[in-house]
Structures are given as structure tokens and as C-alpha cells.
Image (cartoon, rainbow, N blue to C red; front, side, top):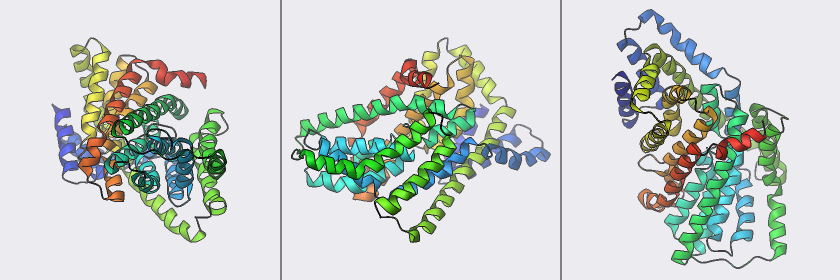
Length: 427
């Protein structure tokens, strides 16, 4: 009953427009006092908040945010889509496939759904519309491609999960690679089917010389995920060091290669990064005290006892977890959902001896569905703001991508090799 009141209160405050950090802080203190907690022990609030954000893993977040801000003015997205367009544009759904491929590469740089959608959307929408693509479908395709940002490493969502559960970041990154790439592949198949069914125009086949020029223009951009992911898997540097190296590399690209970045842009970029980091870290900090309150009230233990008594198979529990995350994603931001549910779902998974790395990927995919589902779907609003298209029109065209993501979450939940196979190979 206590858990029901906590989640009901959190959901109500978020729907009223209260920020995630304030909501979780208020809910934590209120629950602590309702459970008979000693007022004098509230000094633990700042202690727990500081402890939650002092881990070395979370240091990578500001660097990945910095890299995303540098990319937004660095010309990278334009070169990526241009390369995909000349290689795939002549096929059914070629431009939509090019946009998805560009989103996959962007995802392997930024780790953010909104950054992927915005970066590619501003370049690709005009090109797709000019070629005869339905505008709402174009927006939905890029919104779906952006949803790969939290799944394909380096993912900020996976970094948060690692920090909350003390799981290896490299293991989570390796585990997210195959499901993320498979999602991109199935997105491309679906977009090609829709384009052929609706007879959306194809562009003329580009000559090999033009493809070579586009490849040379995109070459340095394509090296970014190789540096980030390859360096971590090779053991050359940690996730935090990879984020710092990648940020510097993207800075060099924007300044000297694409020459779209100037020194005058840096103060605003740094300020945006500081502001975004403060918002993210404040939410994570309040989650530290929220976790303490849950343990104090023994809610995880009670939930485990209830689940163990009600379900003999963890398969039903997994399906229930995916359903809960998808439904919550319709009304709440993914980071808030992760911080609220991890203290509940992780102990349950441990009680059934389920691998936490696999659980992290399942939760990440299920949470990513939320960026495509109204009324809170972030990428829907990003694309609507860029194009002026109606949110619900984009949401209707996104339905096929949503189904694919839910099916992938279920597949990863029940087929360990999809997520743990590559993680095992890279150690």
C-alpha cells in the first residue's frame, strides 16, 4: 500500500508540472516521515544526495553532454546524412533508411534521443519532403531513429543504470550494441515497406564518384564512434575517459575540419553543458535519498515477497516489467522512471537470479519507447517543433516503430545471447 501511494504521489506531481528532482525529493521526505522516520535523521538527505553523484561512472555524463552540444553546431549530422543519401537514396525508402543510419551513427556519439532526432531532423526532413515523402512519416522515422540514442552505446541511460546498480558500464555498452543495431535494421525494413506501399519517390542512383566524395566528407565523423566504443572495448580507456577524448575530437572536427564551430561559440556551448549537467545530476542526487527511503520502509523486500508468492515464473514478471515501463513512459520522462523503478525491479531480478546487464538493456529499450508515445513523447515534440507538423500525426506514423521496439524488448528479455553474447566476447 505504501508503494502505491508513493508512485501515485510521484505521478500526480509530475503531471502537475513539478520538476522531476523536486518531485522525488518531496516524495522521499514525505514517505520517510509517514513511515515514522526520525526528524533528526533528515540530515541524511544531503549526505545521500552527495554520495549518489560522487561515483566515477557518472563523471562521463557531462562530457557526453558536451560532445552532443559540440555536435549540434559542428556539421557532423549533415555529413552523415549526405553519405547515407548517396548510398541508399535510390532504393525504396532510401532517404528514410539514410536518416536511420545517420541516427545510428549519431547515437554512437551522443547517447541522447533528442540530440539524435534534432541533429538529423533539421537536415533530413527538407530533403525527404522535397523527394515526395509524407511529412508526418518522415518525422516519425527520424523520431524513431533518435530513440536509438539511449540504447546504442555510449548511452546516458545505461550510464545511469550502471551508477545505480554498480554494474559494469563497459558490459552494458557491449550488451546494448547488438539490440540497438538490430532495431536500426528492423526500422529500415519497416520504413522501406511503408515507402513501397505508399509509392514514395526514390532518388536517382548516385555515381560512384559522388559516393566517394560523400564518404570522404563523412570519414572523420564516422571515426567518432570507432574512437569511443572501440577504445573502451579495447581497454584503452574507461567510459569517462572515452567521453572526454570524444568531446575533444568533436571539437577539433568542428573547428578545423568542418569549420562550422568558432571560438566565440564555446562560452554558450559550455554554459549549456553546465546547465544540462546540473539538471541531470540534481535528479540523480534526489534519487539517492529516494533509494534510501525505499530501503528504510522495506518496500523492495515487501515487493519481492509479493512477486515471489504471486508468480512462479520470472517470465511473467519480465512481461509485467516491460508493460509497466511502456505505460509509465507515456506519462513520465525516462530518467525519472529509471530512478524510480530500479530500486524495485533490480532486487526482484536478483531474487530470481536474472542477469542485471540483461535487465538493464530490457529496461533501456522499454524506456526508449516512451520518446515515441504521447502525451510526453519527447522526440515527437522535437520533430513537431522543427517541422510544425502535428504531434498526433507523427505519433500515428510512429506506431509501427513502437511495436518493433516492444517486440525487441521482449526478445532481449528472453534470449540472453542478444544482449550478453557480445558482452561475453569482449570480456
